[in-house]
Image 1 (tube, helix red, strand yellow):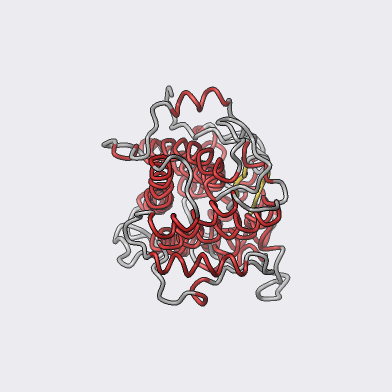
Image 2: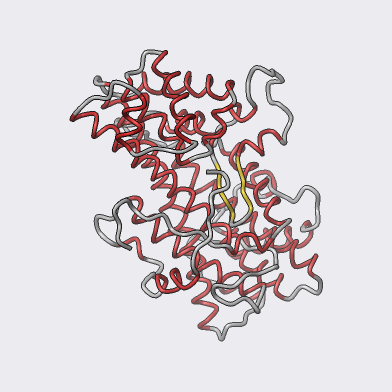
Length: 415
């Protein structure tokens, strides 16, 4: 799974883009996977349009050696979310089948779901751990199958296996239902909704801002100065004064090590949507930079601005909603147990959250606990620093992201 090929035929997605427009989420009754497909395709289109600001030689379907803008990362993150949704679809298939006829062994459940290959052994290991803790066979198999779309190789570490099983039992016990299969479905639906809502929130906000900016810039003849962006780009909810403040700070500190990232300390009280305007101004400044080093530094600052808005204002309320649903388990607890398995292939550059965790000092200093289990993707700072780590890895091979992903197809789709 970690090294799964993510390449796609350029001609195929170019044809698909012919019918994709930004407000493609207005279709009634779309499933999470159908929305995810539209979002991934929309991000691919935006990736080329926004990257062309800093690399005018870039053509649709081509590759750029210039440091990628935030929008070049987005298709890969969206596709990874789609892979997670495939995992929920698989788990739900096991649950539905078990409602008609129960499974009496993990192998029979996996056979019925069509799960084969290397991942089968890891799923069996986690399912058996859950069974030992009193979880019914079909429920244990459905919950363990969620890892099939993630970095299931982490289950080879017995510390991760033990901690994950223990946490799953706690989450299972907390599910607001009586029957075991109902409890399992609540857990799976919670994960599916979390992925879907995050996908929609980020695309609507950051994707919408990108589309508005490209259209605004085009209407002005395709060439604007950073100063014009800061003063005139009409993005609702933003403040020119705040955008100018963030932009000026970014220019002054673009070459700092580490790159500025603690925006809550730097700009207390700011409406973080203003960072989007600052980012577009930074991309325009990067286009005019006298050296590649200056250009790359400004692009990275713009990326940090957008990513902060993305994670602080759009993703965080999804992971920790102000009013949790009564028919869900804790989203934060669910993300904590899944954090060790999170993975994204940024084109040809693979990223696993576990690599980030092992790159840092062991949080508890205890060799009996695996570092990836000591973080929680639902916690802002754990997620934010992990994303910055991913950015820095891709910056070493900037052309990697232009091996664009194939959008995840809903099961049975003819698209």
